[in-house]
Length: 64
Image (cartoon, rainbow, N blue to C red; front, top):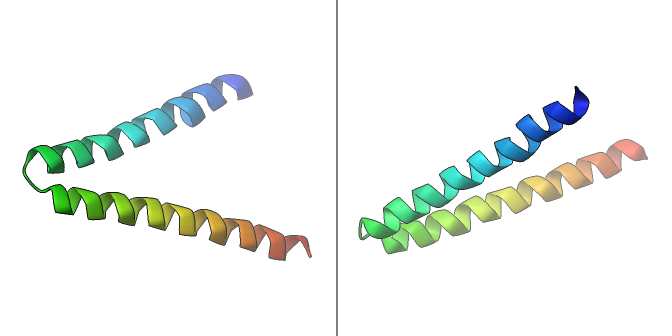
């Protein structure tokens, strides 16, 4: 059950999230809004990286 949950929620959930992200960028780019697509890309990746670092540092603080 744990492996099945990992596959369906973890792996397939990640694919659908990434697909939505890429579809947003593609739609903006095809609609002639390439500057907005670029800043959307920068903002989403940037916020994602900040969230990873925040989670990492919060976990490190919790270990001490």
